[in-house]
Length: 376
Image (cartoon, rainbow, N blue to C red; front, side, top):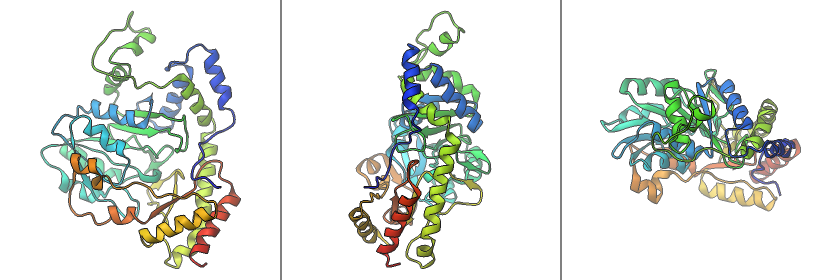
């Protein structure tokens, strides 16, 4: 069976975890947390990066740092994971969903401004499949209307828009290091902070509302309860596991891109014949090979293709059910304008196996079975 996903592994993770155990500091903010944060700051150019227990918690922190309150509105795509919305719903905000672009599956930047009201507080673009949204346009709208921008870059590490790292355009960005992502610590994430004025507040929030981070740096003689907060700091064991992959980040990224290109090349004849649609990467974007998807004619064809692949021991999956159609989405949000593409495109999209350890011959086999389904 070719699995849909296998967590990335370099083979040296246990070595780093052992070092963390032997250091007698395993609760977080130790040597490996510092190394991971330094890598991300250097790689993205952000003012500050804080490792978190998940991308969900990074988004939660961003919503708190934006001071989102009951009655505020936040604009985002419906085609995203629930965490994008939950971060703001937990603060009492109402979600305003806008339609996506069918070419990238990202929020349509041209529909944002019409969705803004006097209650709008933030825009939350989602960089689907590690392909950047049109951030120039989004940031221009946000500046004119004095709105926060929180980038859900869960899938976007190592990706750029016009040469700049995803997650670094808005006031805050969030990465994921879940086991399905390009680099993993099992569960984990990172909060990217563009403006250094928010760093101290973010550190306090992350450390249960205390100035414990300043205490460990020797800046205060004792740490005290300063504000509200929670425990968003991951274990040093998780950070040690993740850093092993950061040490080989370029290699992992290159291998994923090679497999992505291989899929595209092998399936191009199906696209040219009008049987399927392949992913679109805009000229201004550099992606990270996070996923490879195809679009079938409709949901029925997709279901039949999934079944065909499963019979050949290949696990392929569809992705998000649009949030606005879910019970919580109807309760906590509303769709602005017409749903021209969100539902239709979500019902056609099929994700093929994509992971670091995926072999060239496995991609050949998968692509061959897709072609077989379409009689080519």
